[in-house]
Image (tube, rainbow, N blue to C red; front, side, top):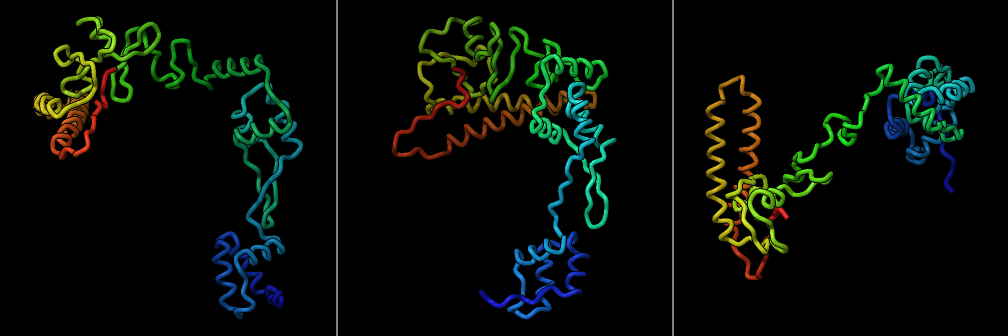
Length: 298
């Protein structure tokens, strides 16, 4: 072991007390070591230990007082954890002392949950239902009926029968309580039954273009170079139509929402066109490689 370092001097202790909550430990050590010989300099961890010995620490925790614990025990069967934390922030008396100042403890929902768990305090189903009913009555909780979709927090209703959605770039439809691919359902119902082993294919490679003339049955999903060549002019025609439509309504303020929808469609079609063009300009590899339609409609 080396010789013990020179103890902290009064002016150094004064500096630490004045700047402990302003500077970090590395900055404090740099300042202290600036005026010390090399063999008397402190490492960051060494100076941190010295600071603890003179009562300087940033790890400050205020414990629950008995009165606040008793309040929580009285309140938890009657109200939720968020409401309890709000009340304790207003009327709680748990305090601690740091640097000679009294600091009041603050509470969050997580603090209440953790304290209840440690004390073994849990609510019964009846108590939970009563709290929910009271909150709904007071307007403190959004009311969800059986028609609300809790997955979207009530902002979108549960899909009705034959409602459509777009998931991962594909259109699906709700049939008998389950979502199935819209393209296959549409072909089965309005064009012809889809034989086993056959798949419905989008000719222009746009999975949202479910027009009857854009659908065909195939027994495989491999996309050849000719398929890309056939799809490119079809997508280009649709893209030009959307661009002309945008030009006609661009200056019409009343059709602002329609303009936004058209611009999104233009961006989507442009992305598909760029994908097709990249496939047509890529040099074929020597090794045979299969391309599977990423937007195949099952």
